[in-house]
Amino acid sequence: MRFLVCLFAALGSLLATPALAQYVPSIHPAPPVNDKENLLYLDLSTGGRVTIVLRPDVAPMTVERIKTLTRRHFYDGLLFHRVIDGFMAQTGDPKGNGTGGSDLPDLKAEFNYLPHVRGAVSAARAQDENSANSQFFIIFEPTLKLDRKYTVFGRVIDGMQYVDAIARGEPPIDPAKIEHAWIAADNPPAYTPAPPAPAASAGADLGPEVTLPGAKPATAPKPTPPAAATAPAKPPRRR
Image 1 (cartoon, one colour):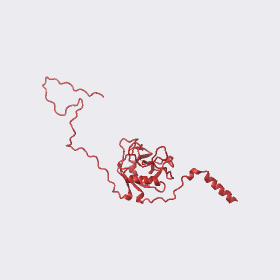
Image 2: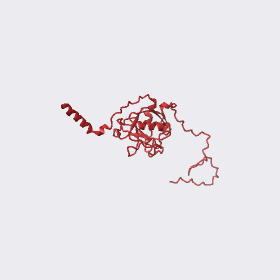
Image 3: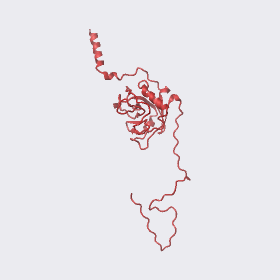
Image 4: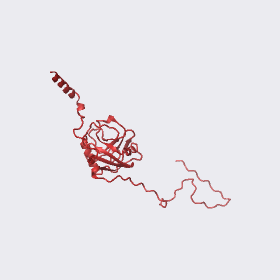
């Protein structure tokens, strides 16, 4: 009899907390960190390659979307359009203003037990929980208030210093960008930094000389007779 009472009490406690039952660990094992099919490379303009281990065990639809878009070269050249110091860096929008996405349908939320700690990679969305599409963000510092409200689908395991170097701003004045995104299983080339912008050579044609108001001409003036007076140069006008 005592056994039955304890059993019913245990069942009652489980039924009384349905919210906890929604976030149970996946029954699928996490992929090993050397599984190339689940390694995402981001070659950033900040100077290096970021390696992210993907987690299809907890967010299979989101991971599949990231792989699909990466293999379509969707992310190549996209900016980090929203970067908040101490919080996160957001990218994945072809419009560059946070309102864009891919031509694929939005994803159903896959909220899970993975926390929003430093290096976590999570799917960005609008107010609708099922509106994630192509955008994602990388966490700078732990932000646990986002847990189970956004879909964490990976974590940076190498190259976090290049994420830290992303220019801050909403939007940044000089935004960093993803030069290339790759899936490791596709055998991408080694990271190579973008070539620097060519400097103007000494003999380059820079157009006609510009003289500011009131400035002396670059060429020597013609000599004037001693008795002749020259008018003073006009000072520059305030704008």
